[in-house]
Amino acid sequence: MTRSKLISHVVKPLLFAVCLIPLLLLGIIDLGANPIETLTHHTGDWALRFLLITLAVTPLQKLTGIGEIVRVRRMLGLYAFFYAVLHAGIYFVLDQGLDFRAVVADVIERPYITIGFAVFLSLIPLAATSTNAMMRRLGGRRWKRLHRIVYLSALGAVVHFLWLVKADLREPLIYLAILLLLLAFRTAPLLTRFRSAVFSPDH
Amino acid sequence: MLIKKPDEIKSSELTDESVYKSRRRFLSAIAAATGLSIGGGYLLSGNAVGKPESNAKSDDARFADLPDGPYSTDEEVSEYSDVTTYNNFYELGTSKEAPARNAHQLITQPWSVTVSGECDKPGVYNLEDILDKQPLEDRIYRLRCVETWSAVIPWVGFSLADTLKRFQPNSKAKYVQFVTIHDPENLKTQNTRVLDWPYREGLRIDEAMHPLATLAVGMYGRILPNQNGAPLRLVVPWKYGFKSIKSIVAIHFTNEEPEATWNMLQPSEYGFYANVNPAVSHPRWSQSKERRLGEWLKRETLPFNGYAEQVAGLYSGMDLKKFF
Ligand code: HEM
Image 1 (cartoon, rainbow over the protein chains, first blue to last red):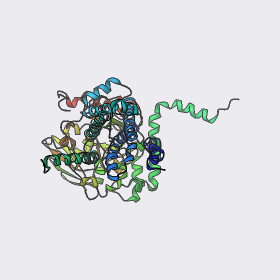
Image 2 (image 1 turned 180 degrees about the vertical axis):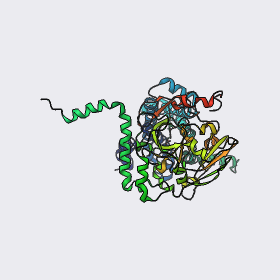
Image 3 (image 1 turned 90 degrees about the vertical axis):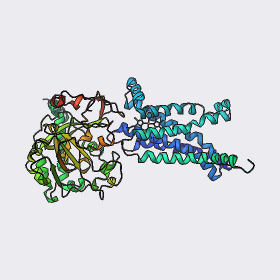
Image 4 (image 1 turned 180 degrees about the horizontal axis):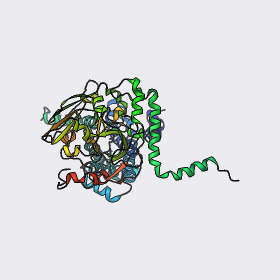
């Protein structure tokens, strides 16, 4: 089997199943004294983690030299959206009991909800344009530019987390560090190019 | 002749007693708790009230069949397993589950309380000295956390006022401060700067002298588990939970408003008074509703956590939006 076929026919379906484990876990683990909070935290954590995992694909591709890795990126991104939908849905249905006015008040008054909501909104066009047809319609360049939003989404999600924590910032700061590392990886080549453009001998 | 099936008898009796449902549940919780305690309960909960293990039984006897304390509620009490696994006690870890897991880090034996400041009887008091003269009561109170969850907990405790009076606060004692144990060697989180240790809280002296203000040494008819603030904690049911300081090692009478940990960390979010108030929302949480542990739907939050009738008078003339 070629590497390309291996990725499409084995790795991808396997990964698809693995990405469902966090959801399945919810049916197994003890949800504790405050189940709705556990559900909210669990799905929020995984939405953020999948965003970061998605962002790690390109660096991983560059590091390993395995170009085909990129074929799982879209699926991972959609999983981030999937868990974000669950997260927002649990908040809206279970936590707020479909109380639309309370939700609007939360979105307006609580900075961490405002930004969480903005992040959620920002993921919608990304998910919506993830089909091959949409990709073709937008054209590679425009599609790419649009999907750069995901960096802002991830940053927003980390800020959302930082903002909701009362005192112990350690966990969201770990996510921030990972995100910055991934960003550094993406911007490093740009910087090098910039530098070589500015300082190149023939300049 | 009609012979009743056993389950019929049972259900009719249940109907007759339905009024006492919550009370009975509580009693059975005690039975379960004491049943456990006679065995390894002491070791299980990893604590003691300053007494050797052999006295566990007598302590439990002392905790059983207590009269109800003032303004005890007859609402259904929360599950013991919920109240002991879902805790805010940063000394034992900052997640809700960590305190139960790290309960062993808190060493409650021996335990003494240092009393100082504006009073005539300062000194270092052994926990037993404080306990001995206090008649224990079942004080079944609502607890409302600023994070918008709540519970109903049958504390085993006694009057804070009666205890404080024994130290004879003088006329300059306008406030009283409480301090939690500081033991970074064992309490691992105290090696981080998550909070400005040791944890401190305070009350105005008239608040402290209110009959609802409680010092607790147990709950559900048994000794306080470490994660719930063993061996001695404050319970101020009309204020947000963070005022009800755990594992108290010092009591200090002062002339000025004392430092309080969350208030110091973020004064715009956590007031010194921190009275439960659905009308004043916290920047992170609307305070108008709360979720009882064990329930799915939220319920309305009541002013002063439902104790307005008893305590609102303490704040007459005060702008509660300003002194939140
Ligand atoms: C409509 C949008 C959103 C709403 C209303 C919302 C709401 C919430 C709420 C209520 C919490 C729990 C706060 C607490 O316990 O005090 C939370 C936690 C969290 N949310 Fe969101 N959120 C939204 C979108 C997102 C998105 C898009 C992400 C990530 C991509 C995300 C990631 C997280 C994370 C990581 C946590 C912390 C979980 C933890 O404490 O372990 N949220 N969110």
